[in-house]
Length: 220
Ligand SMILES: C[S@@+](CC[C@H](N)C(=O)[O-])C[C@H]1O[C@@H](n2cnc3c(N)ncnc32)[C@H](O)[C@@H]1O
Image (cartoon, rainbow, N blue to C red):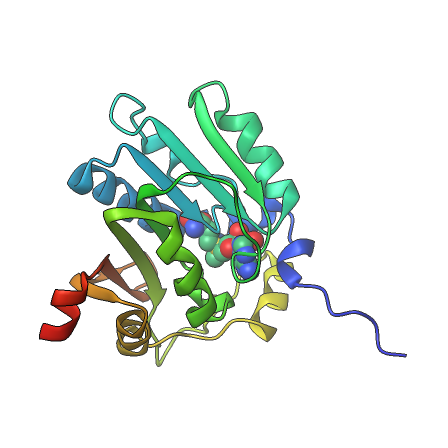
């Protein structure tokens, strides 16, 4: 009998994930934290939700004077447990949820900024975009980071943290143009996009989206 397929993210120790992302030749932890901090500075949201938040990379950049309410969602309960231990005392209005962003509902009030950094590689974009619609306040922003293809570096950069290799079975690069089109089909208009580079020269596309009013949709 075939065993039940479990999501490989559930078997990754946070120390291995974070160790990999912080390796000097990977540098993606720093990159994601910088993109998140840039968005906090630019949009100055009073509330933010990070989907696929792992152990809270970037949460140390949040100023609770501006961003009072912080939501984190992740599939892996151990990631959320460690995030809570790290940040509960620093962020009083921290709301954490364990679950699948494709299928589960989460009982938090809408936020002004939703951040999804390297999440769309692991989920069904249409399902998640539909969920994000109801997570955003009117006029709120969705910020995404997706990895771009590289001719020279493997999708998951080889590293001593070998367990991360298991993710390659579920990871699918999402072309930014496809994300833009799928987002548009759900009523999100792209407002900004830029390409950023990590330490190993891997490139990532950062895209900002806003929910369009029906008038704006007609004009597109
Ligand atoms: C590549 S990591 C990105 C982590 C984080 N944004 C960062 O800055 O390091 C992807 C995260 O998404 C989570 N994840 C994957 N699939 C998910 C799903 N269906 N629902 C919720 N979280 C998911 C994983 O557990 C992991 O923590």
